[in-house]
Length: 520
Image 1 (tube, helix red, strand yellow):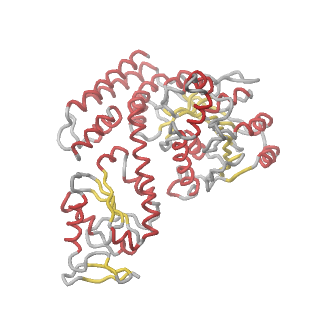
Image 2 (cartoon, helix red, strand yellow):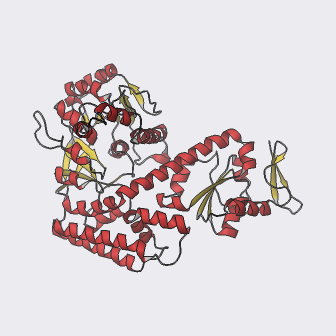
Image 3 (cartoon, one colour):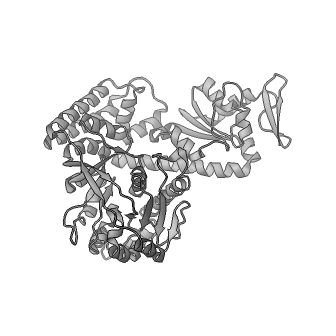
């Protein structure tokens, strides 16, 4: 039981089961000593305070150290009774989860400037709650770290692609989704068991394909209505090499492409539904080219983007196939798969093919860890799909199913056997997927607008100050490793940005301009 009291100096304190959670004499001085000790040899700009009590540590961080606190309370009463001027934080009674709170408050580039401290009396008093919340905080921390790793590899490519692809678009479309089921094919091993059903009942559903499932669909002569692609990586050329019309549909399918995706995709498809993922620079590029895109939340896996798109377009029933989040024995993907030939070419006497498959299936290449990250997102999102806080569309949320259930459980996704899927499709109608062609500015006009944007970026870097949000964005995406290394070594920056950080970003912008001019 919590008992709130006043010290002899009139300061608020609290006891829990006859143990004081903060000093009964001077909790403010206690907080100052604690923060000074915890931040020895560290200079963070943001501190997550696990087990905050009444707000004393948060106030100390603000008033004495000029550090932004993110207080996390283990009991809502300790938050509601916080002292004057203490900032609000997360507590068990909050409308959003601790993960959503941290994801809203933190961006990837904050990680080098972030510290996490915990108040032991609170952690010990609320041990079970503390353990659960700490695990969720660690999940967000790992995700931020993974995002920085991804940005280090792909950040400049996303930036470059957004500008170059805005010139490459041949035909901009919008799609109209009829009433009827939407099937989304991922590339897990279970897709093999569903392909005969997809083939037999092809006229009874709308088919959206994720790139890695294209080889299997082509093998079965199944043409999707829409290919969804968001990845900027090199391996898209292997997936898209399997893309072609089949049977009585020889034309290429339409594609929903993130404007930051691989430029190979924009040269492979003609009919393009352009996706903007709220990265800032992607919408800026489209606007400068005289266009806009269908805005969806940014996502680390194209399977998640597909769900956002179905939700945005008002789909009622969404059926995933091949969304396993796990391998099957040595196989991590459906057969055939775009990587089959690539892996066979990599095999040699001291590195045989079965060893390569075992290495991948056991998580040696990070593949399985990525699947665990994606599964965690689906659990969180699908479990809360009908809540206003996560809805990207005011229309009713779609019903989400998964055919040929996986042992990796996803609350919020209904598991459906193949027999039930056949029963559903047998009584379904024949929905027609329609495409509307939108106006598109001439390529030369788009290029001029994009070149003006690039020159504005370069001018911004000529007098780069750390407080300029656009400067931070340019450095984060165009010189990720340099920026992270600099922040790790110096702590919170101020004043003008050193030239050695600016130069790589400026060089990349000049290179992007050359590519844009080349495509005019």
